[in-house]
Image (tube, rainbow, N blue to C red; front, top):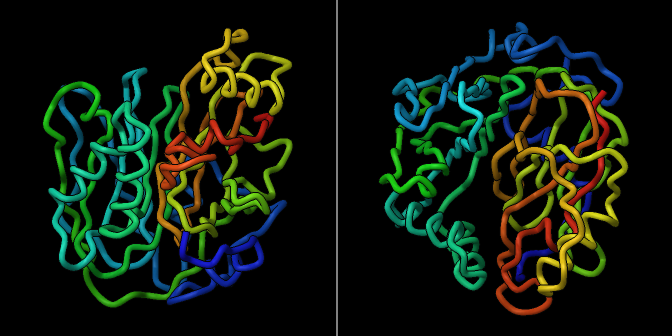
Length: 316
């Protein structure tokens, strides 16, 4: 990695930069209305636009063609109990959306070297603005800042079900309008540990099942923040041991998982998102399955989860 490693101390600078005003936003301990109500609270620039996205295998999803530049909330649902992941990207100058589809194809392949290459190319060619991995439990609401530009959204599940990725264009127009952020309960950061491994920082032991958190990517890699439900009694060490066995080929202990992941889809370095969840109560691992951008040891293009990027959280 050639970029300087960043720490949690830059989180406040990230969320306070540009046209955003933190006045009216809440830190740890704040209350947040259910669903997308928090994202629609009146702000200095008016209500934050809310784009509802319903995703299915057969019908895909739809988006409006334009939205006001600034804070935008995506309220993402699916009637299907299958994996859907709405990913938003802005293509950097000199590249095309076809390049990004190619990069994502590499990143989602079964070859760790290709996974690392796909990550590297995405860092170079695009800005990932996030969105959501759907949950059968309820809607996932993600608020992000969209600077004036053209954005492309697609469902990563298209890569797995054998259809040509259905890409939708969304143009953010107009001058950026300063607005207060929706309320949130806590700040969670993606960073790099002293051993140069990806980690989450400031993960609470408990979080309301209908809570809201601000996620800041203060690292130099892509990261997601998804919740995956576990069996009772599972610990971080158990998940570490489980994935160590996956990598080494040793006999696997019983799976810690009782469901699939759901939450925030990947965002680029120096990006942030406010995420409101509507999930079932119980033990979960906050986890990141984005593959490493380093093909050589010790990361070997493995998913960040396999490298220890997971923390147990009890949703209450």
